[in-house]
Image 1 (cartoon, rainbow, N blue to C red):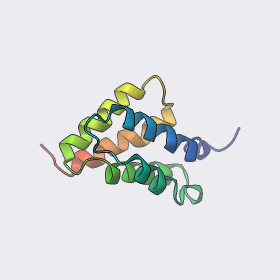
Image 2 (image 1 turned 135 degrees about the vertical axis):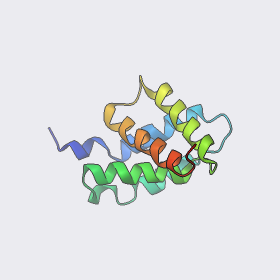
Image 3 (image 1 turned 120 degrees about the vertical axis):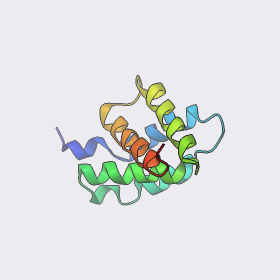
Length: 105
C-alpha cells in the first residue's frame, strides 16, 4: 500500500475533471485548464498540499461568479458520489468552501 497522498494523483485529477464537466450544463468549467494546472507539480506535494492545490485549480477553472461555482461543484459532488472516491471528493469539498468564501451570503 502506498502513501495516502498517492490516492490524489493525475488519474484522480482526470476523474474529477470528468465529473465536473459532466454536470456543467452552462459550459463555464474549463476542464483542460483544470487538468493541466491541477496535475502540474502534484508529485512534489504531500496530501494536504495536494488537496489544497487541486481545490485552488478547481476554483480557478470554475465559473467566475462564486454562486455559480459553488452550485457547479456541489452538483459535481452529488453526481460524483457514486464514481469519485473519498480522496477525490475531498478537494472538491475544499473548493466549494474556497469558492463560497469569495462571495459570502
